[in-house]
Image 1 (tube, rainbow, N blue to C red):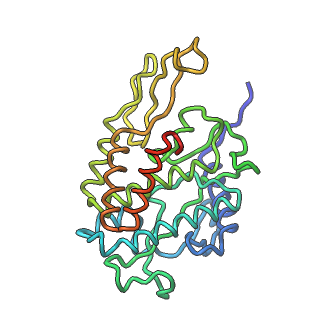
Image 2 (spheres, rainbow, N blue to C red; image 1 turned 30 degrees about the horizontal axis):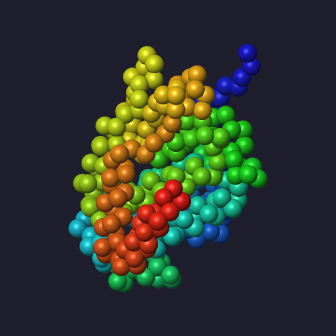
Image 3 (tube, helix red, strand yellow; image 1 turned 90 degrees about the vertical axis):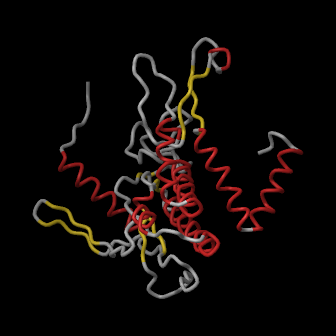
Length: 284
């Protein structure tokens, strides 16, 4: 039985090289954190990045309190666009980030004003995507090269990690980004205590039992459930599928309409979507 074993030192060097290559490819993109310098001193690898004076998203959510959503809504949409542009730039380099989570979104005070005007916003930071240490290459179809196993974020991981859905590729990052957006909107509209309780509610929703092993408590945004044999493609065997957790659906619905009440453009769009769904069920 063949195989390759890696020492901790080898893994550290591999992570260093992966992040070095990724940052070289994304060097000029504004909404990723630029690598300033990288070097090895004796047996230790070092990378130097700009100082994120606002910490990461989790730090920002914990320290900035009592935000008025109406005053910060334009800022919120702008940050969402910045993150989407950073992910799009990563994918344009045929890279899967694989570790998109609030801890890897860093917050900086804008230096030049630029597109990000903070004068009318209660939050003086702009966000950038960081940490490409476990990014991986994808093929021309956007699927991961060597698609057997790879390291990934745990909480924001997509369903295809747990349920075979035809391979892991760039959509995995899109799912993770959507999880970050949902947490971001929950913090803005409901506050950090509700955001923390949202994570606890997700932990309470467990996968269906897997044989002799009890389900693991995780704060993922989906759960794996059993499909009875008569409902599965192969009617002879029981199968599984991934479904969005009930707590996620509830928060998503609440956030959607709370945003709509603040911004009439969202409200009008949602009404058109709801009317379309009623007129053409199953079309979306």
